[in-house]
Image (spheres, rainbow, N blue to C red):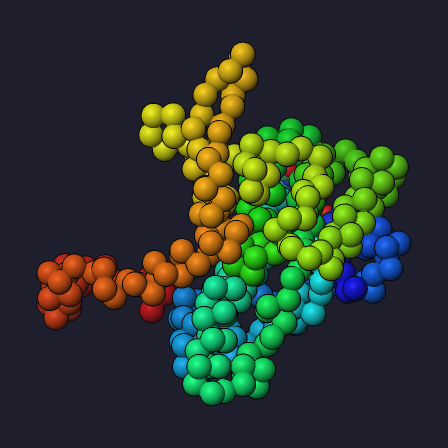
Length: 321
Ligand SMILES: Cc1cc2nc3c(=O)[nH]c(=O)nc-3n(C[C@H](O)[C@H](O)[C@H](O)COP(=O)(O)O)c2cc1C
């Protein structure tokens, strides 16, 4: 069993300590552990070229075309059976480098598209192992830790929810999560026995999930179940009337107030649409694959006149070019 911990914080600071402590927990359960700090790595922002998906469509490896340190992080994640991600909170959410990784891993490692590519290669008589990185099909579990400096937890509210965005494309269940805040006053987690014990436990939780017969049946081991039963986050998006949705995983439910408490009921069938379940990413893949058929004829016809229409912006040029 291989457990990887990735710290997106400063070298030797809070995120590193938390990542290493979680690895000590995983090691206790017999894991081979590996630590990676990304602060000196260059992980460029996705440029939206669709190079990865075009390559996959043509029976290629589907990897990102940008040449930077991303491959190193990607390879470490693919190699692991369990991954502990520890990211600092910058401006109320995880730092930008973390989101760069999410975007770069998302499309290129999407489980539904990878399954489709594999079946297409097989149908054409090819061997997917010769082209694809088969580690994308391996079950892999996540533990997430968001680390903020502020004493007011409210200043870390979008940390963990945003960290979940790395989970759905590769269908990696989050088995535990922890919001560590107040690091300015804590100085270093290593001084705080209870906190250290909880981080250690998170490492054990990730290791304990490895090898489960059904990854979607692994119990969530976090401290609070959260309002969303699929991703266990506590955010709600108000849609219409009493209808609400989980902005992280997309489940829809009905909100009511019962005995002074907010209660949200999510119908069971909504699990099928959650991005944290295979059905959710498959639905999205089908939506993307059908774009061509869904564009109205009149819009397609207008395409030939696009250049002419764009002339209205001629006076506004890119300041840098
Ligand atoms: C640019 C920047 C923005 C930050 N914004 C927040 C914030 O919104 N909320 C918060 O709790 N901490 C914020 N912090 C503090 C960091 O989350 C905190 O120092 C954390 O411990 C960094 O992790 P590290 O010690 O592993 O590097 C910010 C730090 C930086 C550098």
